[in-house]
Structures are given as C-alpha cells and as structure tokens.
Length: 130
Image (tube, rainbow, N blue to C red; front, side, top):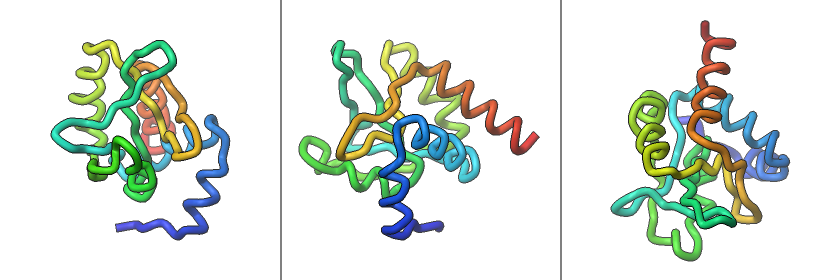
C-alpha cells in the first residue's frame, strides 16, 4: 500500500485541473486502479447543465478528502483499471453521464466523456508499458 504524505497531498491539490488530470492518468495506470465513493451506488455530482458526473480520484486519500456534505456517508472504494475500462466506463456512457477526474473539496475536477478518459488511459499505458 502506497500511502501519501500530507505534503504530497497538499502539493497535488495545488495543481491546476490539467496538471491534476495528468497526475490522475499516470497514477491510475501505474497502480492499475482508481477510486470512487460508494454507498449503495457510486457518488455522483452534476455539471452546470444537470448532467450526472461520476467523480474519480487517483488514490484513496483524495477520495477521503471529498467525504463531506452529502457524500459524508460514502466510503472510498477502489476500482481496478480493467473493471473501469471494461465495465464501469461503458455503463457510464450508456447512461449519458460524464466523468469528473480528480475533483477537490475546493473545486471541480476535469469533466470529460468516457471516450476521452478511456483514450487517455490507454495512450499512457501503451506509451509507458508497451
């Protein structure tokens, strides 16, 4: 288990959205998992147009930081990379939802569609692991 130090967490949280997105892609592919918040279903938020958005984080610690307000009862839950790509993303796409990559308690994450996230993950995987 690779736990994060508070210093590392703070440094990553200070990154802008695009830099957090790059960090997310690297961490998720390298560790072969992402994290969501679960309580009888995945925690969801909505974008400004009312479209459901599934938030995802690169590590448990970041998901934990978002357990506030309506998400206080949710628990961080790992999502293996293969399950994300083969099961969860197709389900999200079929429901017309988007993904919120690495939202922070202080701001929104990078919102994108399933194809954009899937492509970024696969491209990083091919580029770095063949």
